[in-house]
Length: 98
Image (cartoon, rainbow, N blue to C red; front, top):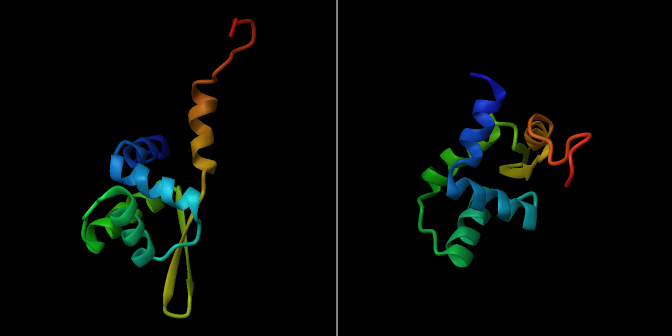
């Protein structure tokens, strides 16, 4: 599957967008921390397994990177893949008026 398809699939889901919002707010969170923040701040009562599956989709799209430290797995946001959206559909093209 092409990278754009994976990217749009990843950001097309509101729960995944909330996860990205939480990682922008505080990068390097564990699954437990992400679940807690989603419950406390957004009233989202998804299971840890469901959030883990969302994180897997985000990781597949390149929007989340993981790293292990001891027995903990930390999730970091990578907004680099989002550049392809602005490159595909630039906000202002040369010769156009804003």
